[in-house]
Length: 91
Image (cartoon, rainbow, N blue to C red; front, side, top):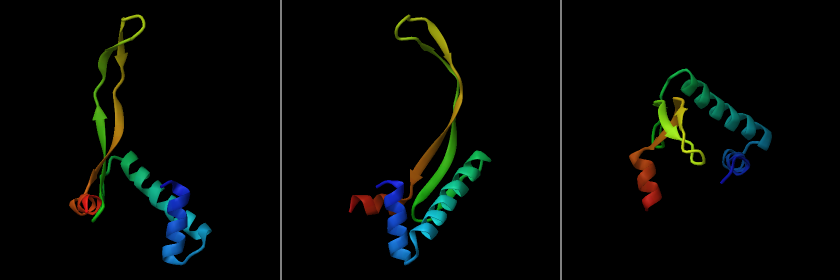
């Protein structure tokens, strides 16, 4: 399912226009991203939680020249599904 399909489903289920559904979906996504960017964890009851994990810098190897290269530290978004979400997928 892609974003357009989510918007169409929200519009149908909530009986609102696709324009209003687009605004709602975009607002939810941007709110989650803003919270993560400011270092907050986002918990959605019955669904799961989003968090930012920091991967430390490390030394890697260029696969062509075999020379060591420094791989910088990065922040990655992690998602952990709730028990309810896991149970729903496994039913």
